[in-house]
Image 1 (cartoon, rainbow, N blue to C red):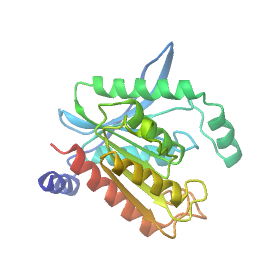
Image 2 (tube, rainbow, N blue to C red):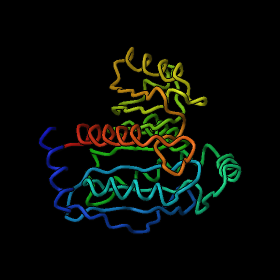
Image 3 (tube, helix red, strand yellow):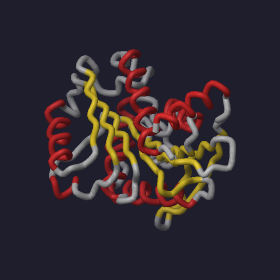
Image 4 (tube, rainbow, N blue to C red):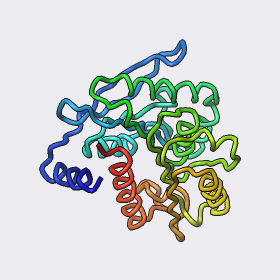
Length: 246
């Protein structure tokens, strides 16, 4: 695993992984949905990562995260649960988010997972999911509904702590949270961590004591914490290298 981490650092320094984005579409039930896939140079097979947006939608910041992950040597699929809509105000974001049916979201997430697995340059046995805010909760859902998922990163997303649900999880989990988050409370996070450990699941929880919700996004002018965000990204990179490494 250490070798894989060092290899990633070397490739970054040399610019060996230059992400190439491409608009793609695939079926989700009777619907055709859109996404952007970011592919490193080379033939692979590469590990794959589902990238799930915040409640704003698939905006430039989320695309940037997908591109950064691809630069590390992963095929990153940035999915669009809003079907082309991108919010510009919190009220608009809440309205669009509330308009996404739960069954459609679950179907879209599964379709994205199957699409990523089907790519010839993706190692179908090494697939992860990552999301922020609303997308963090959906990333948790992917871990619940995809038993072959390898790794899952939940950035201040909603959780559950009932054993019946958590028993379904086989993926290694990294949870990143803010200690001052009023929506995803520290108590809820600790209950989740305790329940996961009691079930023998692989879970790593990081709580930044002075951070609020959405502290990793610099567009969050009131709550962005640069040092915590940088540390969270470093932990994410290391976690993915350890869990998805060859």
